[in-house]
Amino acid sequence: MRTRGEQWLDEEAGPIVRPYALIRGRTRSSGDDLDLIAMVTATGAPYTGEAGLGPEEARILKLADRPMSVADIASEIDLPLGVVRVLLGDLQDQDMISVRAPAHAGPRPNERILKEVINGLRAL
Image (cartoon, rainbow, N blue to C red; front, side, top):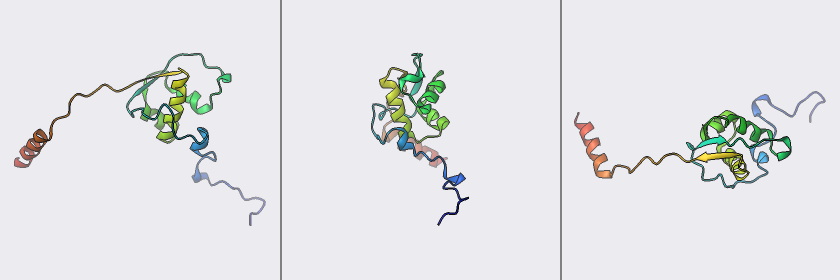
């Protein structure tokens, strides 16, 4: 039984609103395939409070004034990556951000070369 002075919150428990509530329970969006190192940049489209954006999306737009990776954005706004990808997908669908995929690193070395390198290191 709670007494009148008790609080429901625990300071270590974190925010009351769970991250999935921010994205209205959605787990899929057009941002699902965003790479962790893809660079996100705000397009400069005018932002008005009437656009229906929440404070998290507004913060993403502010962070994306300069190019920033998906992983860095998730870290900065302290939300799970899945939630950030949904938010980024929504912003991308509204043409408020542009996302540049990471450059292709080129072909990977084949297994034979890697084994030769390992054997050479062991011989040292």
